[in-house]
Length: 115
Length: 116
Image (cartoon, rainbow over all chains, first blue to last red; front, side, top):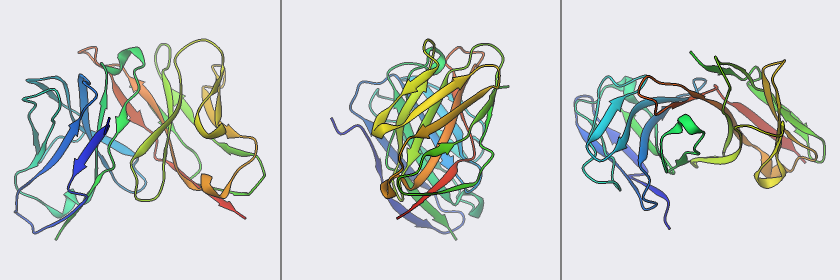
């Protein structure tokens, strides 16, 4: 198994540009989520999905859209990038929801710089 | 709301000495607690978790953590640190949500520096 994969590894955008961060997992996990990591703030949840066709907002959803058309893929879209979205983005997945103590597994991350 | 605190931004330890990374939590109900490690330019790797049972939890790479309900703590420990343990360590707690799926709430992270 490749686990959780993310592309690209690094991206530079200009303010106002759009892009999609890709995330895929091959473990047949039901629960997937996107986090952003900023210095001194830990990881903050952007959006999550509990299965194909079902998504919900996390702590910092503004400026980001998600969809989940398949179990494997969970892309994160930035419609109009802003410098405040400069961050490292992590995708994670788990077999089921976290309320039962399920472990989340993380991808390698995408480093995004918005100029 | 559930939360975790990591009171130290950085921990410095000499190789071979014991390593402790502190974490305290605030939850309503029983806590589900996790430790993750992030090596430079890498994703987060799961180390261990406490769900229920024995208060001493053993995990990957020789790490263990002790759950202390009275002190609301979940400190990460390693008896003898290695230079390769230098990394960023995150404590996290499951936050209960109205949709019953749960979310992970992370601490700010503690940078561990192990010197030869």
